[in-house]
Length: 489
Image (tube, rainbow, N blue to C red; front, top):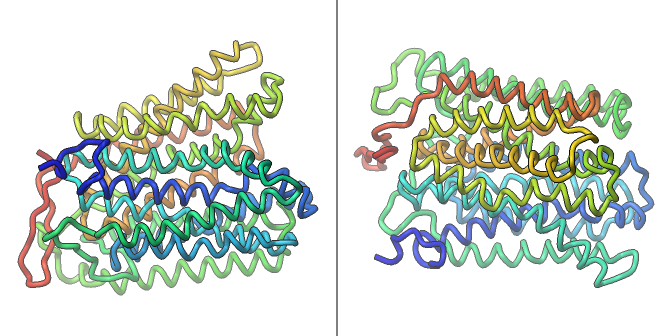
């Protein structure tokens, strides 16, 4: 049947779902990154200081870490169609709040709440996995991630022009407002056009929404350990807002955040225990087991891939400007070559993963990632500009192809928990960005690139513990019967 063929020119069946999914993700990234291209206009219009602008950039990503975990759980429970539609509609509200802001405080609250829309990515991972077989899954997820991720570059290229068309000091408000309208309207289109699964297929849901299930005692301990860096990244963000950083929060407020994060972690430990305590008395049947170490490895790899991408996209224009003494406009254009690679690299990583195996692909791409950032650390003013750009694009290929290969593997671990797993792995990408950008505030550009290369080497080492997904995974139907889902040929 035509609807079953993998054809990018088709808008039927699974291909229709894929196209609507990447468009939804694209819009979330346009909305999430609608501030950076208009930064100077907003600064002038609202009379902000440079420190206040930096604070808004920090707040823009702060909420995304917990949001990805929460949205992943909600997706597993209520289905991608409802959750994606709701996210697009609800997040248009803080977008409009930002449009109407006339003070730093109002803008700060709006940008903080808009961090939630950065969680949209994990919803599509589950939806695409429901519609595509294992041998096409990497390619489909790569297209979803790569083409959707391009929304940040699209915002950078189009929003300043739209703002200028409306003209005046307030032109940025119309440009940002337009992205909110897009998000609101597409929420209706998405809800009316998508179903969670193909007709006749079962949408498997997790037994619990409050915490991730694990199937062994060792996995229980590993899950609790892997939760710590997410809280650590939020604490790091709080520190950056403290008097030691940009000074937005008082010492008392920051200490209150630290205590709150510690209490939240302890509460989460109690929920993990509540959901999984039975494994300490009754072993889980072999057919229903999965290995959480697979999730942990993918978390580390996404920390190094997407984490470094977010960080490098933020600093690369300034790096080229200062290293080669370029104009701001030319530096931005040159640096955009890094983001442009997303259109082909991420789908390419997924396709290679489909053809040659998940683990071998990840090993090769992670090794390339380490070498690529080591090469970037060598770039200096004595290099020809074209060679520096070529090095950035080569590095970018391995970064984004690695992201595609990571999420070619995520849906093959445990179907009913795909949203939760994607949420945790996606959150680790944001954790990586926070860590890398914090490192950059203390070291030179060269050292920054070397630090990323070192974490890629660590990722390569952890990857040795990963097992290639093979055979089938089992899910239980409501009537108690078991469905086996292929994860390899």
